Amino acid sequence: MSVSHSPYTPRYRTEVYGLRALAAVSVIAYHAGVGSVVGGYLGVDMFFVLSGFLITGLLIDSAGRGLRALPAFYARPMRRLLTAAFAKSLEPVLDTADRRRSIR
Image (cartoon, rainbow, N blue to C red; front, side, top):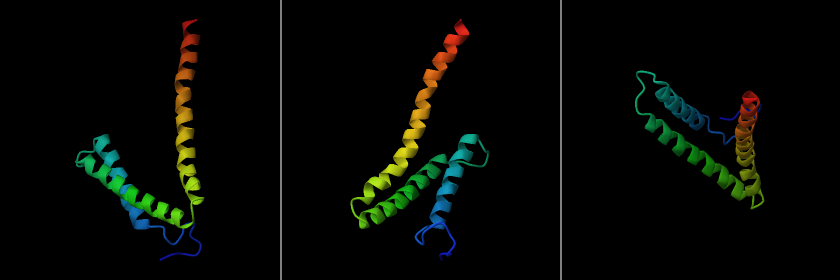
């Protein structure tokens, strides 16, 4: 069922995204040491299977639009990952500068 004012396409699978969120929460709860949560591996497996299902659907849609859609498909996660990697790579540089100041 799609709503006309929804920001998502009709192919948006609310139930799959919901299950993926539950899988992530179960892994977080397991690592947080919540007493009744056991088997954090099941949450990891569920998350990867559901993510693979969603990514495969997106790739099939991109392939249906032609080869020019594939670079755009890969550009989104690369921008997100490279931004995080760049920010993380600044940490040793800033830490070294901070240590040099504290030595003086």
